[in-house]
Length: 426
Image (cartoon, rainbow, N blue to C red; front, side, top):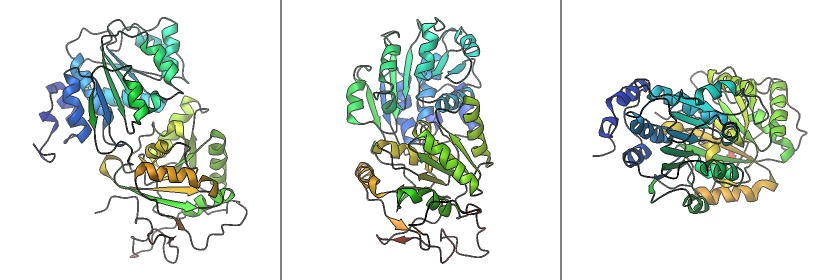
């Protein structure tokens, strides 16, 4: 059966789950869902790789729910480990929607909030636990978690979960789980060293690989803007003159740079919020909701948040700093062009960052065009210009294919400018 004819009714899922799928509005399963759900329902271990925004969360939640439908309630049968609070909250919300016509329940366990409510949820009120490793270990050390009946483990964003930052905590958790279990690994990228490491946790896994594991999401238009490091903020403010940049996600390397950049944007009259590890959970939720609602035009984030931001219609991703690890670029730019839409990824690259950008180009298998903005002073002091961030309305009747109204056009040294807008082409 071809992809155009395939529906969720072709997958081995109970009618109660099909009702939840229909209410969400899903009609056609993605490639990762078609490939992973049938063997996962049968209990196979899975390594699933697919581009960001292709439905990997449903690809592991639906088999979990299918396998647990007939289990006695009030026991923890499934554990989903995820690297960020935002991903945990997002997955819990999605689980509630999919399981809306069942009695199955889930709980998100993460830091930055009180433990009491989570403790109650862990004490027999949820069959699925979605957790960040650090907070889960806190609960485990206090005896709040009973994994005796655990049947399924999921490592979401597995490449991040199995790097050296999370690996010690992950090993401690896995050492206290039942050995007889199903294990599912899902990620947008799966470097060979992570695959080798995963063999410690999986048994005869089925590899479900959609396209190349290291290629950035289809539909993303990439553009690099060379600029001196001290002029990056000024160039970003200049870019934000474009009225088409309606919902912009900006990534920095550090928390300090994120906070400083937000202050510069606000002084320039641009509504911006910030999200990083030093912000409280309430502050992170408020920033994300403000960005989703359009109250904030710009959200500045560090890489820890790159995998936890699920916002529809992000028109542009801006790499204010080139990431040290090229795989991070894939996750960053995957925040736009989600669900087969289109979007733009700009990278502000200083001379010192060119080697890092070349690593990105090797990873995604394509050169990234370089461009400059006519009229921008690349040598001035980087002081925000009052009012620089106020978007100009598109000219009535003008050619919307030009990102900047004439004469504000990109000059590309490779003979190619950016695509017209972050909106889907018609």
